[in-house]
Amino acid sequence: MIDISPSGIAMRGIDLNSFEDFARLIKAGENAAPASVFFPMHRVERIELDARNGDIPSLSERFENRTGQEFTALSGFAAAAGSAAASSSSRRRD
Image (cartoon, rainbow, N blue to C red; front, side, top):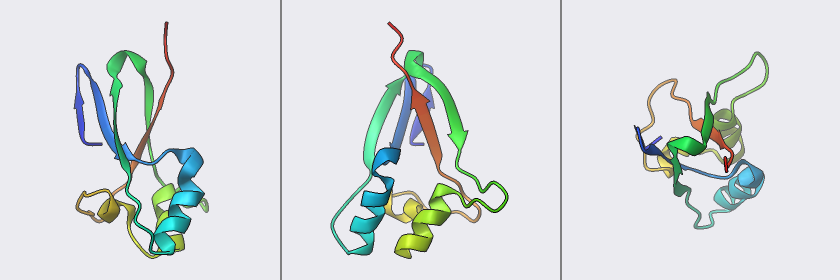
């Protein structure tokens, strides 16, 4: 998460539908970078913490296992011990 304010949330990451492709590109040494996006607050339904669930690894752990790199390093954020990535789900409300 880059920023959160009453107007919305700015995040840097990848679309979860592209997770495997993105990891494959990074592992192959291709030039790929996470996107920065802004979600207006009226579209935000929830924010979830990317964390291990029992034996199921977090997405950030899966990414590191596949690529040998921490996602936080690719996203431009300093990696902190035990840090987790956030993902958001939004739906347009008309």
